[in-house]
Image (tube, rainbow, N blue to C red):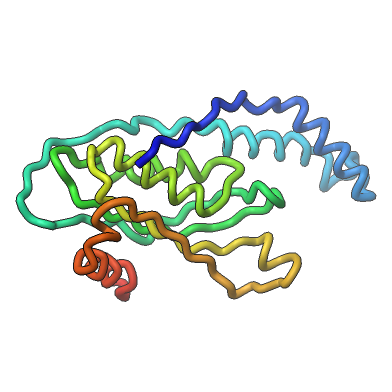
Length: 196
């Protein structure tokens, strides 16, 4: 897979976010000094800082792995929240990550942490899926990865068409998880099977 550059983002300017939130409340016809809103600018700034400046912890842990089969592992039902960059509204993703290990296999918790690195940003569902697949492939030394996400977007369910029950599915399968139809079918069965 071709590497995807991720530009460095400056840390959240909490004082400015507080000031802008106060201005937003005024523009919405609210009194930012009233009891229920008096601390809202500080809370909003704290949330953005927690969300965007989150420390993901250790990401690079891999373990030696030897296999001569097409065995794969799959972690599914991982739930993360992100924020749509088009409307600044949240969206929730339910993600499955499948991987056919080569010489190195990534620690399972690191897969979730890698997903959170990309979800904790102003994002698009497709980009989250693509970037996570790329990072896992790069760390493990094989493109035999599949990342599948089902999203519920508040920008779609609370505005415009107000399509509340609608879900959006996206996937990235750069290697044999797409080109090998038998392997793809095995992964899909596990992704779509009922909870065990």
